[in-house]
Length: 373
Image (spheres, rainbow, N blue to C red):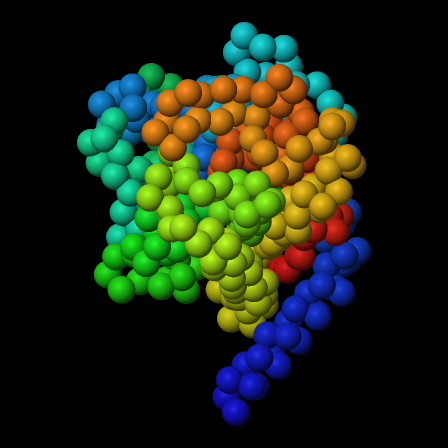
């Protein structure tokens, strides 16, 4: 009976929030009053150069106060979605001018290979002689940067214009938590479960909130079951990959299990976020958007000609290596024809679509988002 009552309360919160926040007096036409800064956390779907810094500095983290540069040498083969949103020029390249994007300054803490918490999933990287830095590290790095004081100027020379009402904080993490050598293969540590991974995300929001964050975008898990790494036979699913050379033979079972996991996590996000924001009032004065990138990417998969150059390819990869990570080749077609850069990572073309919709999310007008405050 208590569970039933809780479900009714949570459902009521969802209905109230959904009808209240679109055109809510005081909400305005935008999710955030002024979008001057974008602070991002996540994994290779978001990272530009942070893992590269670790690798090039013997596993050492960037020092507080250092703004890392943008890059086109990313896991997606080009410019990341958050860099497209930012519209800040990358050194040596022309500015990414487009009316679809913004002029928000990007502070990117994402690390390729990251999970939410290394105490739940431990993934070792020989190049840094330790685990991939996790989101726990990322948020702590943000806090250190936000408190940084330049010894010469006695001011914070990194965050020069960060306010509670002009900065959006986005979180997109889960690809490595749910995948091979993680929950999918029963490789979690300390008897942790998928709800523990979800707990980790909201605990990180706690830290950001305490440090002044008030506008949060939680990006749900991508449709990993549609990727070549986790897809079904006949739909681009691979029997083996350099990301998972010892993949089980029943790749249909793998794909269905991944679909179960992404669906479970996204359902948890859908109901827990309004509970924490509206019922439990865990973040007073904060606003949340859950960006349903799963549905957006599924739409790209099902209607590719609406998003990609023709002929569009949503089951294959632009860049492919053998399971031994040799004999790597690239397609004769341009990257803009592909949904996937390689077996696991969305292409730059997909990132452009995600970026355009993220801007709609921040405007408070995305059909792929739900809003609560």
